[in-house]
Image (cartoon, rainbow, N blue to C red):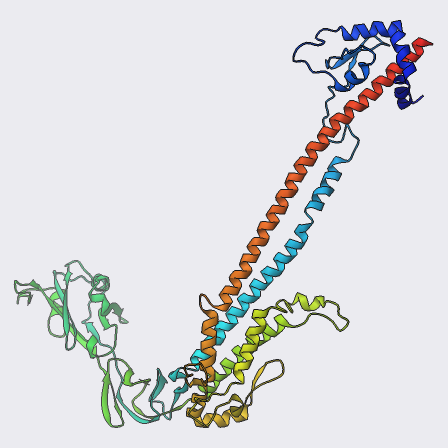
Length: 564
């Protein structure tokens, strides 16, 4: 007989009557029900045993003491209502961790869709970042084409080696004869020779008078124990003096030393005078040494003590017969927009002419910037399905089709292309359309330049300039190509412009997506906690029922043997 058969047999009417009439069971029942604490206030009873054994014991309930007296052995056995469960699933025999894990994963299923959407939104934000960057390049290129300096670009050439020119701004076209008469040079002065390591013997003052039309005077104290090297160090260490001159000790083959002092800059404004004396009087004048004073410092203060070996000179040249001077070998402001550098005495012919290559380079820069934006927009909005209607995974990986169907992007692409077709009706020259100067939009929106036509158009720079720089009317019509694109891209790139607004909207979507993911994770966490609590309770109940089944089966078996 199985345990469940015994259970059913035990609770059949006949079994209940047999049990009630059994003297052995009555004795054991009395033993169990009369155990200490039965019915005491605040005690917990086993609800299952109370229900079923109430039929046998006339309403008496078993106390949940955690043990019962075995009818068969007379020993204490583990009770059915106080079973401890150390791990979820032990009592029920269920794979609780696996069940809970699968249910939690099912609750988290929406995360897959949300994460996929988040990746797409992030990719769109990145794509709009690229569009904004390329649009900024287009804005810069268009702006450059609206500036006079772009169309007035000039280049200078030189026919000789005496002088060269460099463009620093707008300069009128023309030729200039340069006759270099003299190069600028710095001043160098040296002292008379002294024995190696010789000291000054007496103390005194070394005075520097620096400048040409405007001079500054600085004094340096010399000690009797100073050598020429000490004097050089004092000159180079003086904050004021060292700004204009630098001192060095030089030696000849015999070892004798001289102090060499050089001006740091070329030109007459950097000339200096050096004088020596015994001190400074009350009027600030340098006092001369006495007739009886002797020593190396006295020698240096005398005639020939300090001599100038190279005088400071300005650079001199004649520009178309006009004599000019400069402290340096560069004449920076002689002609506005042109810097002239001289390098040798002699003549040169400088010629300034319009720089058509620079103008063409600026136009090509605009074309390249436009094509870069067009290529990105075309790639982002193109279809990513094959001929049979399937998704082209390879195309998606390189970013294609990311903004397909995005109204803002499609509108932007169309606007950029339409502006190429506009007529610059306010242009004052011979050209009003880009096609007239060799610029054509090809299939797919790509802009190309016909070099031959552009070269011909560059011969009439003023008309070409007007095509790009003409002002628009009050309704925004009739403007030049560069004017239109600059206005358009300025609005796009503005703080409250289309690109920033679109990026902000996408970022808001991404933030909301993150909030939704957090909610899904929170729900999954709550579900997991609830499931584990429920399965823990189930374990306790199942453990109680299993113990009860085993206990009752044991009792039925014992009673059946007793009745035999």
